Image (cartoon, rainbow, N blue to C red; front, side, top):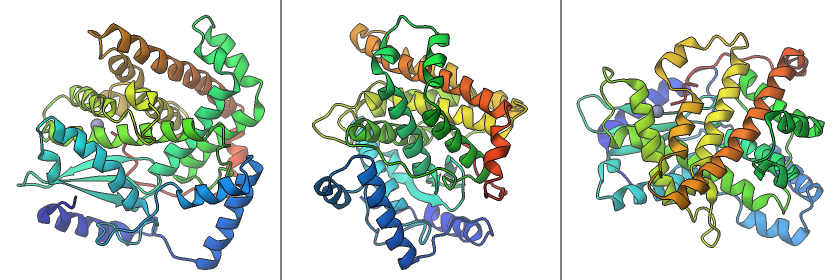
Amino acid sequence: MRQKNDAARDLWAQMFERAAADVNATMHEPDEEGEAAQRELTIQALREAGWSEAQIERRSDADRLHGELETANSPGVGPGLEYRLKHLSEPVRMAISKTGDISHEKIEIAIDPVAGVSASLTNVIMTDEGILSVSSFLFRWCGLVARAYTRTLYADIAHWTSPASSPKDDRRLLLKDPALIRYWFQIFVSFSGTGTHVLVPFRPSSPTEFHLFEQVAWAMEYFTIAHEFGHHVLSHRSVDENPKTQEFQADAFAAKVCEQLEFEPFPLLSNPYTRTGAGASLMLLALEILRAFESPDGNDAAVAETHPTARDRIAKISARNLMQPKQLKMDQEFNGTVLRIMSAVASVMREARDAGGNGRFKDQGAASTSRNGDESH
Ligand SMILES: [Zn+2]
């Protein structure tokens, strides 16, 4: 499906040109030698993660979506980013169309050439067209958080899914695994300091982790995109309206869309993270920890005024199927596990940050860069 929204495309072309010319723009410069070396490193890392040669070959054939678009709205940002966004948008558009609403056809998709984790919807003034854009590093962020989450869950799945333990037990369990804590910490330090994954070592999922990891990552991405589509479909154009109400409405819309994406990305494997909204919860809670790293004094009052807290949003997402007891129970179990894991992670991260680990990591090379556009809705 190719949208033909000339006003939106024109506006985006102007916005993109300006953003791409910025010194901090995340434009991709092709470098064949560097990319070949990178491929070698990837294969090496996969071997170390326990993949056989045959599995590696199959995996690189079917690797997480590669491809080029004939006409891209954001040329030259990162290889395959707009293609991936388009690929993720199609099932979301299909799920929306099923309800008889085709207003999503007025939306163009694009990649913001900026660092950080963000997704936004730009309305084109005087028209009913809009532009849904995500930052260049959004997918990387989802991938890393999904991987760290999968590893944390698999470290003791019985513990994390048993209702009998306390936050203290959760913390104690997490503290037993310094390598895992370090991985989480590197993700938050890297994204808060540079807006990219540059400080996080590449540790691919093992064959055991692979399916869950993919399901979690896709669920986070689908929710983020469906939420922005929601703002458009629900005609959230007026700034006068209560932004908190609009956030809840867009969440509810996205959660309904995600329920329909239960068999993504694997057609034969039900994905509880899209089905229950747990992918949404993970995204929201991970972003909340990231914001704490970005403003260590906890001075986030401005955001709190306009946006509901992650916990309020998750409470609504996990209680949305009140009339279907079986589904409600499943929703609460999966969202509950995410909440427990991420509460333990948040607590341990806060401590690590206070202990000054933050400074130590920053000294290892990343110059801090000024960032813009990391508004996440
Ligand atoms: Zn929003």
